[in-house]
View 1: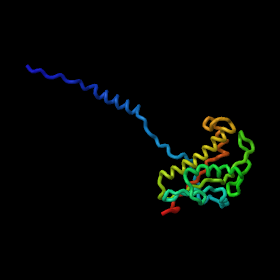
View 2: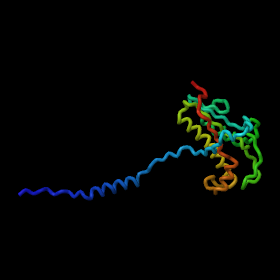
View 3: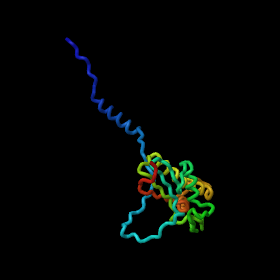
View 4: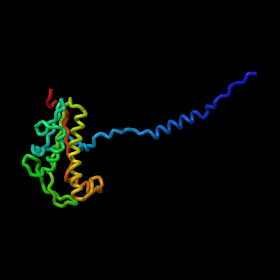
Length: 193
C-alpha cells in the first residue's frame, strides 16, 4: 500500500500574505513633494478693475532668467549666489537709497510705529519658456531664503527667539514688516539664444 505524501496546510497562507502586505504598507515611508508655498491673489473680474496708478519702478525688484539659465537682476547679469543679498538689500533699503523701494511709517503690533516698505514694493520674477526647472527652483529658493533670513534676524533682534518659535501674533507682526511679495509673470521669451 502506497502512502500519500503529507500536504502542507495552505489555509493560513492567505492570512500570512495579507499580514505581510499590511506590515509593508504601514512601515513604508512615502515621499511627498510639497512644492512651492505660494498664496495666489484673489480672482478679480476684469470688468471690476478700476484704473490704478502704475507702480513706481523703484518699488519693483526685477529678476529675469533667460533660456540659457542666465540670471539678470535689475538689468544686470548676476550670479545666483549673489541674488539673496541683493533681494535682502531691496527688501530693507537700509540706507534709504532713492532707487530702492519707498518706505512709510506704519503701526505694527509689538513694534509700535515702524518704518516698512510701501505696499507696492514687490519682487517680480519672470523666466523664459526655455528656463530649466532646476534653475527656476534655485532662483525661487534664493528669493524665499532672503525673506526668511530677514524674518529670522528681526525675530532674534526683537524677541531673542527664532522666528519659528514665536507665537502666531508675533510672527504675523514680523510678516507685516517683511512680507513675502513675489510676483511671477507668465513665462515668455526673455532673451538668450
